[in-house]
Length: 480
Image (cartoon, rainbow, N blue to C red; front, side):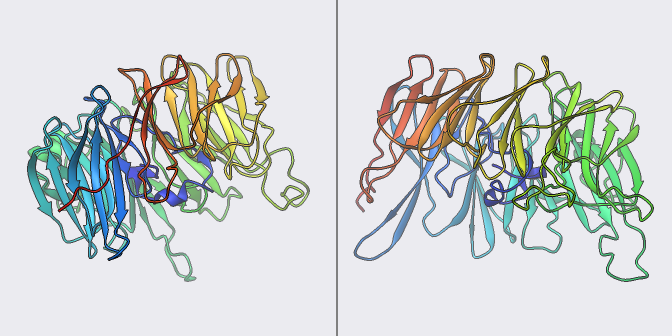
């Protein structure tokens, strides 16, 4: 799922948002299915797609969630989601969880990961939006989009019970650690500053261990929060950010640092954006002014990658000749907070991806209308890639190889970050979506059907030989 903290923003916001790209597809990742995206269960490496059919005579629509086995090419039906919307799939420790909505109410259905036998079903009285699983995959955080201020619920992945994160503020954002079931959140207060007598805004940063929360039966204390908070920090004169930059909580790969992008609200300071950097073990708080989110980290957790609106192409009025704001990368040493600002050869807004293995940042226009740039942190070198304009809206990372594979306008591209080369992959078909199977070292892709009444075929593709291992034609709707 592509989104902000807890994936609370709709997929349509990916295009146009600036900062860290949320367009990477990950096996085992929570996946929104409505637009044809391919989900992969990283335990079995089975792929999942939602096939939609319309009866020409009755105009009745059938929606089937299907699984494709990469070894046998067998296609299995998991669940009929006809008449339901907002479908997404998750892979908790307990199995496979499918969420879908009807009449503003969600239904959760849990399946065995191997047999697809139904294990549990739970109807809820709200419409959920976005998901984020804890590292153990025992807990799922999700936003309630039918209630004021979109409160966040925690779902038990085994029995599907839901608990609301209690707070007394106006908006809450949250993110799990990478290696422990610890939840970091920021709560905003006094966000409405339209009245002259409004109290100054502020934020409260909190964290909890889910083991302790569960042991306390999810009961709040007399302050209205869950007890046994590991951190409880108040930060004055800041408020949430909800535009192209937004308050996505960034956690370093080693879990040592949490970064909260915010907007400054102190009338005595000229800065508009800032990053709150928190050391997760000590609660030490530092501020990086004039930096925006969402942010990412280099693989060794030493550098925060952020950005600002002070690129070299901005003129006297702070804009480029075409009226946009020119943005640049900010490489921030997490220990000293020293900022190394780097212009990239892209005008206007930028989005970026940070390599999983090396020390590279891939930068694209946030509208995908310019050539991408590869920035080499180790050698302080920026190179614009040859080839067409590309975005970072649909891609996978081939870990251990320092490769990015991108789908754009029906074509497949390989970016070799070690070699600094972008190449077009010759395919006999146009692709729509892709994901990756790490154990097989294959990619899985859907094509554009030759006829309007056919379903996209699923292709298992070898990134070494650059050929399909197999292609699976999806069957027509079964007869009643």
